Amino acid sequence: MTGVVSNTAPSPGAGRLFVVSAPSGAGKTTLCNAVRQRFPMLQYSVSTTTRAPRTGERDGVDYHFISTAAFEEGIRNGVWAEWASVHGNYYGTSAAVIDEAIRNGRHILLDIDVQGAAQIVARFPDSVTIFIMPPSIAVLKQRLGGRGTDDPAEVARRLAAAQNEIDQRGRYRHVVVNDTLAAAVAELSRLFASYIADNGNGAAPDTVSS
Image 1 (cartoon, rainbow, N blue to C red):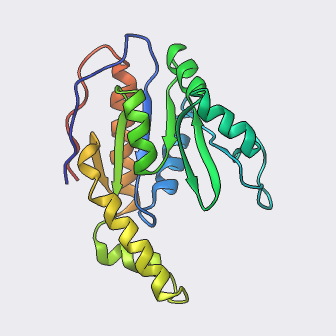
Image 2: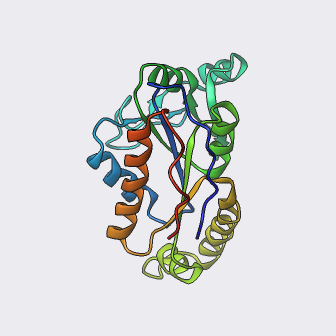
């Protein structure tokens, strides 16, 4: 599987913006956590939401929790680099946080869906976009089905949504197939290391082939 490489690069000394997307069940969160452990200088963008905090969630750590009125004011004022309404709640990423990190030479990681990634790239065209692929649809179906206790209609809905996201993988600079976790972590880490080492002073690394 290959991704499309763009040779655009940020200004020398500017930070890199990494955008990672994947269908549900592809292991994106696990891979992003592994990369963050290997690259502790990465700033992880905490999303903002209007939904109520769940048990154990901390404001400013898991999400920034704000009111619907405040979020909608942010929409009107262009505060969000990307945003969406999901099941009656807003979710968004602050453009100011991204701008400030890049301007000060800090690298930032966004873990977002394909819809959000498209909005990010429209605003930050130098973004390093990476799509995480499952090894096959059959494997993805097995992961989404879990132990077989999920409602078949829900599994089918999630599979259809996943296929729609997979169909958009060609919009990403790189595609990494999560067949075995160790290999996927190594490939993703190689990508991050290449871009961080370059840091706007040369061409983008070669297209990933996994």
